[in-house]
Length: 343
Image 1 (tube, rainbow, N blue to C red):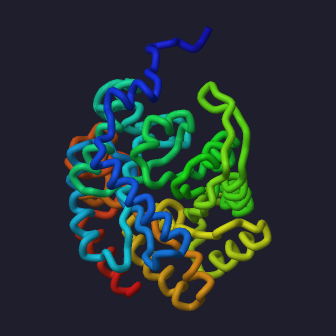
Image 2 (cartoon, helix red, strand yellow):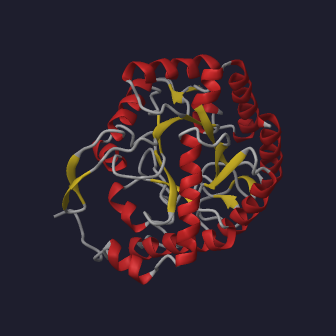
């Protein structure tokens, strides 16, 4: 047999009992969930800003970063609602490379996924404690969601997962906003179908149970650009792209159509410094169309303390070990500019 069973993974109940969310933080998350949902249902005029490193590999650096976000949130509270991007599992195109803190709680040591589950939960709790901001994470493995379900206020489904049936069905049972990215091919119909599926009720097998879901009306699109058959990056944040998604939402009769723009990945051509320019262009599109302005609910930004990236075994504090990110100075200027443009 080619599968080696290394260690038994504790149940979500065991982990939540071992590392509980304190009542005061539970109240913070509940309030934040309501505020974020209100943005997606148009009860609140603000826009969402999901922002943070490509992957979170150092707890101290992540908490330093989210603490800065909390202070920045106070300055832009009238226009923006900031959600820290604390991504703890990293999809890899070839399956090779750093796969996130879930796999490697210490990025310079061997994988240990049981310890990883404990560490990512501890990191989310500490970040919320120190910043007052509940966070976003990516759902790379649907079965792992119960380990963080009481902590997260936003979930993203990546470009390589959005066609997966289990991801779509699991999302239909969540009660927080979930962004479904367009696949790397750029096929918008795949993304729209995924959103429709996530908004629909289902019965399926999940974590050893037959479960039923009511559908998630807060499921929405994340546009992240595409890659053509020659490996060229193709952005999809332009005005014409946004109008096309609006029409496709109408044709599919997607409830509560909403879009978040991922300003990095193929939208920036993996040129992370282009993110502030892309934000400005999207805001201009919003000013040119009431439909687009209503549909755009926010932005997703890759940002960290130090700009750029380092090797996967690097140890420079606050610098990404996966995709390169904006540094703090450029991040702060971009967020303040965005708030001004939305005022």
